[in-house]
Structure formats: C-alpha cells, structure tokens
Amino acid sequence: MTSTPEALHALAGCAHRIRRYAVRMGEVQGQGYVGQALGWADVLAVAYGHALALKPDDPAWEGRDRFLLSHGHYAIAHYAALIEAGVIPETELETYGSDDSRLPMSGMASYTPGMEISGGSLGQGLVIGVGMALGLKQKRNPAFVYNSMSDGELDEGSTWEAAMAAAHYRLDNLICLVDINNQQADGPSTKVLGFEPLADKWAAFGWHVQRVDGNDLPAVLAAFEAARSLAEPTPRVILFDTLMGKGVPFLEAREKNHFIRVDPPEWRQALDHLDATEPQGAAA
Ligand SMILES: Cc1ncc(C[n+]2csc(CCOP(=O)(O)OP(=O)(O)O)c2C)c(N)n1
Ligand SMILES: [Mg+2]
Image (cartoon, rainbow, N blue to C red; front, top):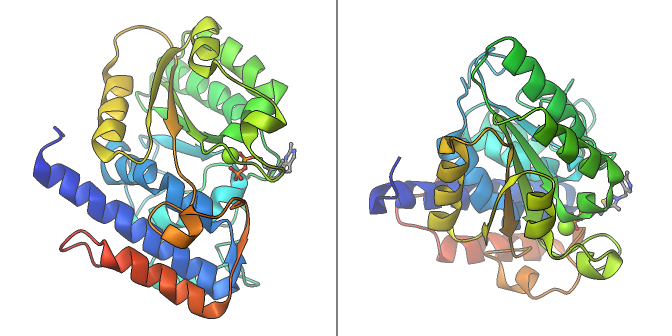
C-alpha cells in the first residue's frame, strides 16, 4: 500500500472505529484502560487494517503474522482491533469483562481468538516473541512476529535480555512496537524510571530503530513499511510517541489516564466527540 489519500482515508476510518469500539467497551463496564486504546488506535489501524497477514475466519492459520499483546491490560484496544479485523463479531463487545465472556479484562490466549499470548505480567512479550521468531525461521515460515508493548515495560530487565538475544539471532522477522505515552500507573514513565535516550539504547542493542508520532497515520504507515521491507538482518523496533485519550478532548486533558472511571453520560460524550471528527464514510 502506498500512502495515497484513499489508503490513508481508509486507515483513518479503521482508527475511528477502533476508538469507538473501545469507548463502548468502557461504557459496558463503566471503567477500563480506554485511554491506552485511544492513544494506540492509529498503530492498531495500520497493523490490522494493512500490515498483518491474517485470515479472520482462521485465527490460528499457520501463515499468519503473530501479534503479541505484551501489555495485557491493553486488551480493550486489542479486542477493538480484532472486531475491526473481523475476527470477533461487533455484538460481542457488549459482553466485555463479564463472566463467561471471551473478552476478559486482561488478554488471555485461551479465551479469545486472535490473542496469541496471555498478558498481565509485564515484560514477557518480547521474550516470547524472540522464541516465536526463532521458531518460525527454523520452520522456514515467512511470517512476522510483532510485539506490542508499553513504555512501562522498558523498566523490565527481561525486555533488554530479549532485545540482546534478538540481535544475536539476527531476527529480521521480529518487529517491536513500543507505545511511548509517557504514562504508567504510578505517574509519568520518565519520572518512574528515566529511559532516554531511548532510540540510542535500542540501536546500541543491535536493533534498527525508528521513532515517530504514533498518532500521525502517514508516519505510522511509513514506519511499518520501512520495518517490513528493510534488508538488514536485524530486528526492528518502532518507538511511537502517542497521546493517551487521543480523540476525546476531556480525556486527552486528564493528567492521569492509566485507568479511567467516568460517569455514565461521559461515555456518550466521548462517543459524540469521536463522531464529531469522524472521517466521512467511516461509520461501522
Ligand atoms: C511485572 C509487572 N509488574 C508490575 C505490574 C503492575 N502494573 C500494571 S499496569 C502498570 C503500569 C505499567 O506501565 P504502562 O504499561 O506504560 O502503563 P500505561 O501506559 O498503560 O498507563 C504496572 C506497573 C504488572 N502488571 N506486571
Ligand atoms: Mg505507558
């Protein structure tokens, strides 16, 4: 896909619907990790609306690209993307977080089609991703492994052990996507444990690095394309600077967005804000 106006318009529609599905799941439970979903929606739109090889009717298809949700608390964002991709029916979002639902509050591989790993304990995705990427290479399977992770997971030693191993094994089929929203449960990520200069750190670990605005769709699309087409035998990381709550002004303005609990009418207001800026023809 080239970044034609039509292609970008289609991706903007994907991102809009992903945001809407996430807010509706927040409304179902009255709370949730909705700010992350709004901030990460543009990256998910490019992943699920363009980059990933998958068969919605056969989520376990051997040739699929693997998308690992390392930050399991972003489940709401991932469910929204799986609905957009046609893996999960839209009506199922009404069950979000309830007993017997396939959509529990944290990502669980055994519950949800299209969920490759169980999350919750942060810093595990890249470790698993290294093993998967190595295994795919040994089987001569050309699929990519995408590890989706948060900036809080940069504080985990396991992330950097895995980064070192990925470069050692020359895993050019591994693409790590990091959400730099500069937020954690305990405050701004850079105040919890400083990680800059982040691009230099990944480069020093032997990775091909890009850092882009994760809410700028053309930039996100270009970064995915560059990561996929690179000829060098190195793993690739894309550092995305994002804004939590993106698209809903009263959420964007909140200082703490790690876990959102708002009054019932505010979920409707959030949907109204999204719809007011909806790309034409993007309605679900
Ligand atoms: C190994 C581990 N340590 C601590 C936690 C508790 N915890 C849950 S979410 C979170 C914040 C992590 O930062 P990030 O994912 O960047 O937060 P967000 O951007 O979603 O606000 C923490 C510390 C955990 N889930 N796993
Ligand atoms: Mg964060």
